[in-house]
Length: 96
Image 1 (cartoon, rainbow, N blue to C red):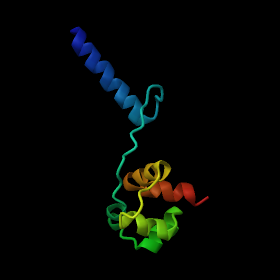
Image 2 (cartoon, helix red, strand yellow):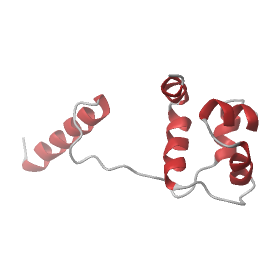
Image 3 (cartoon, rainbow, N blue to C red):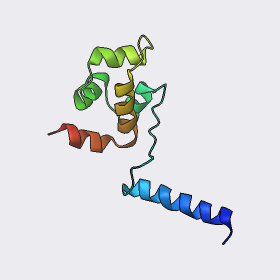
Image 4 (cartoon, rainbow, N blue to C red):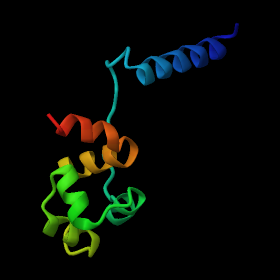
């Protein structure tokens, strides 16, 4: 196998290990600058109060985010991103 081919295989194996949760060194977190809160909420079929209650947000904050009066802080953007991809995991984690 060529040197370039070996690097590609190595990179693919590392990506697979990250996806499986087997490897954490060198992992870089991407925190989005913008999060479409209304779209996330609508995709779950929840009202603003239901979304707020289910995920621990203040309902006024959700309203402000959706009306672009405020933007979610970094930690909220991280949580919202996880909710967008794995809402049940967040619900399970917050239920205890």
